[in-house]
Amino acid sequence: AASKRRSLSCTNTVKAFTPPMSMYSSSCSSSQNKSNNNISNADDESNTNKLKAQWSLGRDVWKNVPILSASSSSTVHIQTKVRLEPRPDNDTISSSISSSSSFSWPEIVQSSILYGFGAYNPRGEVMPDEINREQHLLMQSDIVNGLQQLNTSTSQDTVLPPAFWWQGASIWEDGSSERGFIVAFPKQNKNMIPSSKSGSQEVLEEDHDHDEKIRMQMKEAHDFIIQLAAKYNQGAVYRFEMEVHGQQRLMRETIPVLDAGTDACVEVEIDEYDDNGDASASGLIDLSLFE
Image 1 (cartoon, helix red, strand yellow):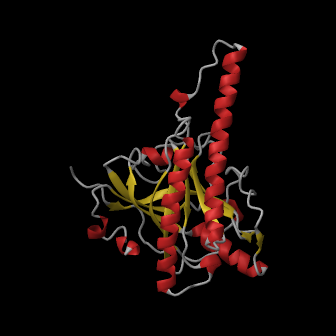
Image 2 (image 1 turned 120 degrees about the horizontal axis):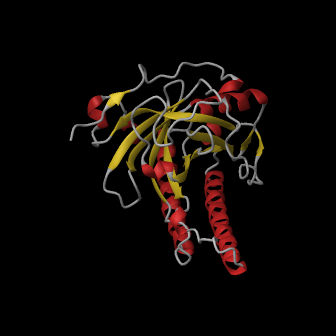
Image 3 (image 1 turned 120 degrees about the vertical axis):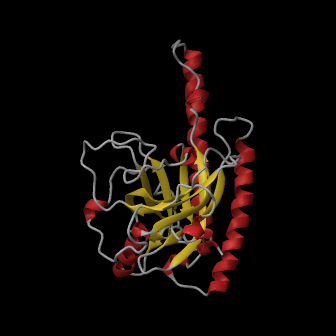
């Protein structure tokens, strides 16, 4: 099959600018972003604004994203970009299609809550490359071990599919980049939700118990990510979720971990896409970020 490789933008560099308030969306969920009790103020307002602008404008590069699930043999490479112009209220698009391209978001992206984070350059402080690489490998080990524990603890109830991860990276306005990870927590399959059509008290209680298990497992997942980021002295993490009410699009929320005031919520779109594992040959997605 022919490769779906192409650039959907004329440049890989995001021009530096002060983000207008209109680019931030109020639609991202804020129900969990205050859960970290260790959050502290950044050194000063200027530094907070700098970090907020950097993190809210970053491009995401995802390597070997499974199409359907962790066991999927088909993978794609994706680079995203921030949508800078807000959508009109009546602008509704398919949840499976990027608003600026004909490429579909992989099913796993549509059906999961994703977290993006890494161990490089804690709280914006540039560290030597050898230290960043060492911390990156340590965090990878913590992710593998942590997800194994989470998946084991939820396997008996089988309410949610197992969580998994892939390699990610962020490219900043100044052209610098940081390696990291994307952790996917699949949301419940509607086919797994008990039916309450009968309206009996027993079935209603079953529905409630099922929903409560889901809520608790997603909270465990969120807390695991926040605690891991804090362990590596990270200022914030990304949380991605496909918005399904009204305007359907992939939203990326910056959730403060150690740096208060850096929260933001933006829409991200597919910028570059490669489905044959050879993105580096086209020069559209820089896989040297992962070397």
